[in-house]
Amino acid sequence: MIEIQKSLTYDQLLTQYQALQLQNEKLTFELDQLNRLIFGNKSERFVPVADTNQLQLALDIQAQETLPTVEPRTKQITYTRTDTKKSTAHQGRLYIPAHIPREIILLEPQESTEGCKKIGEEVTEELHIKPAIFFVKQQP
Image (cartoon, rainbow, N blue to C red; front, side, top):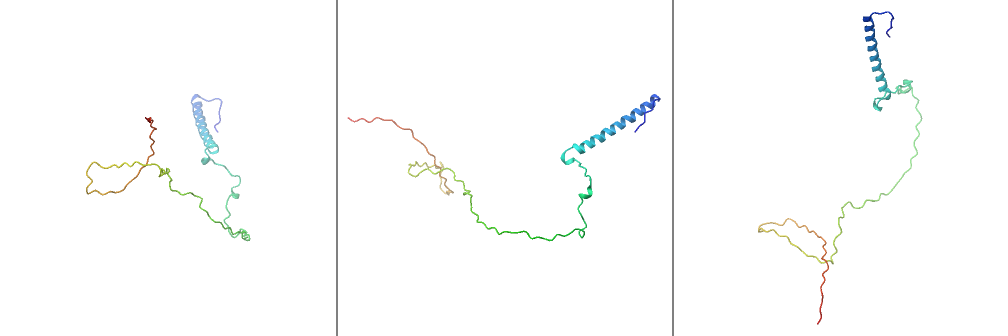
């Protein structure tokens, strides 16, 4: 620490002031570092241990006592696995019942199809409703 004297000249006081200011900055920096170690993020914390020898692993293998090995009690367990999953195939929408009349619409290309080969066919069904029709029957 810097000793403060009473009867000093201006230059000596200025030098002493600058030295005290430098010391203050140094101590403030050290205090910030210690606070960061103690109160910082969990990954950056430093927790001192009173006795580090207790935490050390014993490296002298011969000095350690060997305990007699006790075989653990075992029990044979058997089970039968049942498949609880439903089929993974997507069921999609239900099919339209066969008793409902169907109107077949064929879409043909406008150009000539000679020499062309049919690759596949996809059938799409949509359920439509015709509104009720009102009419009058007359008998003479």
